[in-house]
Image 1 (cartoon, rainbow, N blue to C red):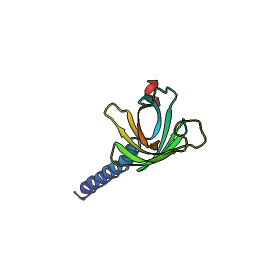
Image 2 (cartoon, rainbow, N blue to C red; image 1 turned 60 degrees about the vertical axis):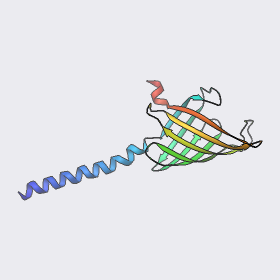
Image 3 (cartoon, rainbow, N blue to C red; image 1 turned 90 degrees about the horizontal axis):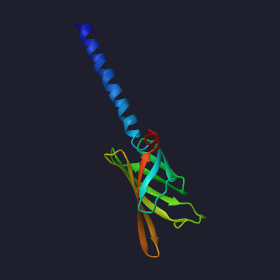
Length: 138
């Protein structure tokens, strides 16, 4: 009887530890990876991509079109933070800062809202929709 009870206890501990270890890894896969833009209100850009490195609740977001951001996850499928456009480029937003919000939708896409600091008195919100690059290859 004691051996049976001990086996059940050990089995329960293994399941508990496995579940607690799997949760952060599953959450970390929410944003981590390479994403390609598939739609935007700022114009079509088939070459626009972002790379997100996720460590726990922290996200480092690097775009191939001269902007970068840092965000924190706010839930299982949302994150928010701030970033800036690289200075010295010929781009409209060169040197401008922005607030960024990310959300995963039910279609497994990444929705990005980027509110750029005012230019000539008006702020602008860019909405982009991204899909993981490995999903595009399938």
